[in-house]
Length: 481
Image 1 (cartoon, rainbow, N blue to C red):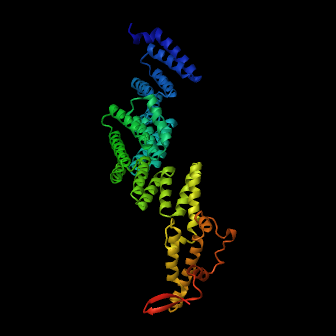
Image 2 (cartoon, one colour; image 1 turned 90 degrees about the vertical axis):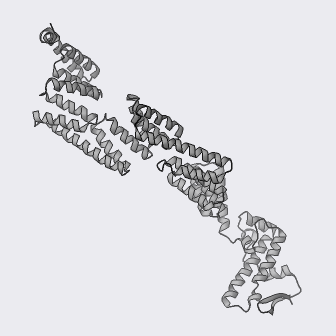
Image 3 (cartoon, rainbow, N blue to C red; image 1 turned 30 degrees about the vertical axis):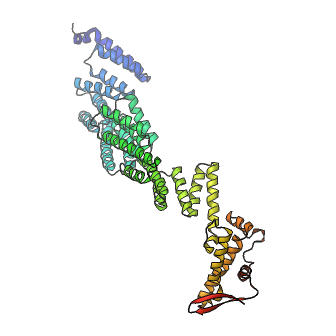
């Protein structure tokens, strides 16, 4: 007796018994046992459409949609009028992300039962997924990755087993800098399918954008082994290798003191991939360091600014920029950067850098007595005296007695400032307080209590008054009375 004949005799009753036991386990949500009994029923009677339909439903509950699809398709091959078979086939197609095929299955179910509410709803769901796919494709081209993630999240509600949707979402999460989420999605797929080239590419992409370039290359190479024509993995692998090489060459040139070459190499590296934000932030900071070595401080500040625009947590870039601000006497900006650094990393070193910047800012807001006398901050006592002699004679009011009232007023102001500067810088105690940024008004050093003329007389000595007399047009000489 062949198996078909056997099914209609002793086997049919036994198969029905296995099906009933399968149904009981299915009702108790013990899907593994239900699967086993439906399989026994199929083995006894392999031409029964409902057995395949029931096993398909069980596999769907176990999340094994690809196997479930095979059973659902077999059920409708055996019985094309099996509405639930078509519904399950459509549901499997939809869960796996093949919305067009799902539509065809649901349409067939509606042809057989046009009032079937489930078929009507699932048909709408499948069309919604088709629409989300179209929008996502357009938005990916526009680089609107947030919108793509939104569309894929909506599509995955109906297609939870679609690797393609998950990969697209993961790729966009990586492009948005949401690396842990992207890694998680790719890792889930690789647990189920370790040879999935798209998932390997996304894992590599996350590492690449996190500046772990060597590890990233390994994943790209693995993806290309699985799919030699994987265009994105090919481009990413090429970019990663080029970036790594240029950056390393730039670092080597910098260590060797060849700053001009280092600048060129870092600039070339920055042109390789504008999407690699973290690596480019480091390249900008490195180039900023090169510019500071070349004393191109404005360019160094610009590079560090570009670095923190790309990565606003990049402490090294803030520190480099702050030092450049200090070197260019832009103390308010330096304080702002050091405050940002200290808020992020409260170390003793960062606290001291902030205090130094705050002190220099405070000092910068008062009169610069060195500048007034035209001397260096390390000027000797003799140099300070010579500078005072020159400036005091240059700005003395008697020398400008024939000038306009406006000029006289300006020169008198300068004469007083020169005297003030000399009073401070010629006195070791006052000079020390001034250099350390302390307030000079403390300890009775009130700068409003001195007379510039008395300082002038005391400096130049002489028995009495003094005057400037003309010795010719535009020429003056100093004469004691």
